[in-house]
Image (cartoon, rainbow, N blue to C red; front, side, top):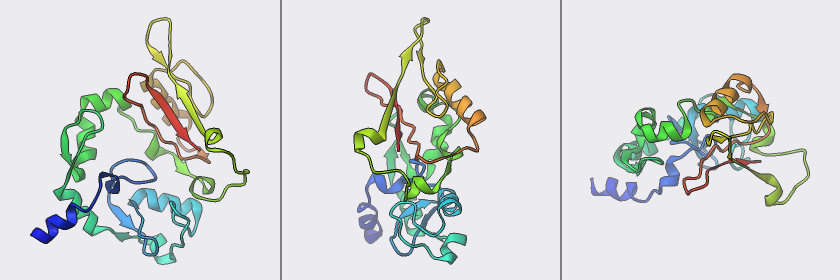
Length: 205
């Protein structure tokens, strides 16, 4: 029992988040060669798009793994023991229950909306590794979409994919899911509202 607790405390909170969807891991799977962990659905989607490479480091993934990735059962067990803070209400929740908590957390719903953009976007080969574009500086690869304020005093946003503007936060979510649901984009969308006064949507290319 003491050994289990010691092993659990060796993890950091970042270990329980998927590098693809940026959410708490759901059915975590681990690559054999590089030992990177992803949500099973995110990993299989990346395999369909990128072929034989790890979505994070471009390491080799075997054919067997691409079809049937190995469950990270050790990490699942730790997620049942350790708790983390909800990103909106700061309530302490067991990691394996965090996604369920988000469905009922009013502050989370107010901040991110009922829909979630990230799981609906497909991943292109450029988003997980090689790109045909020349390398650019970090400042060129990060675009920040700040919220504007309409005449009514409510914040509005611009769609990062088609540039249509004057959306409320929820309407932007609905618009992207309705109009760009099956669009393959060469970016990893990181949808994040900064909770320090000014709020922004950050897209990482």
